[in-house]
Length: 363
Image 1 (cartoon, rainbow, N blue to C red):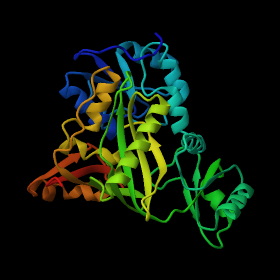
Image 2 (image 1 turned 120 degrees about the vertical axis):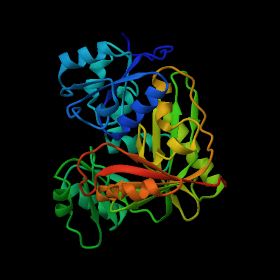
Image 3 (image 1 turned 45 degrees about the vertical axis):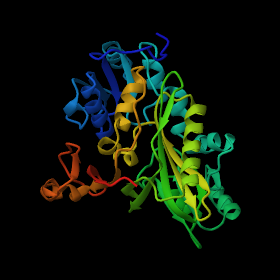
Image 4 (image 1 turned 60 degrees about the vertical axis):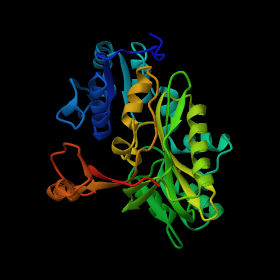
């Protein structure tokens, strides 16, 4: 099979999910509401948040070709909740069934240098950056960009992991060692008014819908609160949406794309990062929109028309990190609070255990 998107999968079909975390869990729940089943595949699938709500689970490595083939033949389409699934895994699966987003999208999203280059080639602005393959490269980048930078590993790293801040007097060799001495990217600090993100869904026919830009506030490098819609000027929100749509189209994405952006004091929009999957900053859509970001992913990979992104209320989404989740009795007793727990047994520091959404009058 070529791996192109099927024209349409009827309810009763099975969606394969690569990755077993909370994003897969919430996608599986959205799929079940529409009448689809989910079969999750991941090395850590056993007892995982996604497996708890899925019809089947395969526990196997990303390089287990025989297991991948069995999995592919047991489902009708495959998607993912984690953009760092090896490209070779997706290419192998595409021999047997459709997989979206595809390897071309993942190859860009998995590498920060490729990602920045791709975005800049579209004429879209980012913070100044330089690739760095050594401590000497880091030193040169700092000399060119300025003393206030952040060094990130080119691959992996999220929620503040795989990063080292650089300031006046920072030893480039120490920063290089802090990210593990791997290929990296040096990004200049941006003085920004706020961070926003836009989530776009795109179907195999090229149809696109975009949720309104939302404002993201972080704590200790992890998303803390998302406000929907963002408190920015209408023209800034429109530009953020235009940028996200342009990137999704250029990637030829089938699925869901989240684009995080900085908004400067004068209203300019600079792309920070992107993720071709449902995103933490889109969790509010589960409670405030006719169709959530998770339902949009199901619709896109099953060849269905995309759902409405109409916002039925404003919303404030707060992550429950680590022991925050122990407040569940209080949150369940709070009138109007919409509590979502991810089924994780152990509350560790920095671990996303759930989220709570509070709906507000629409502005």
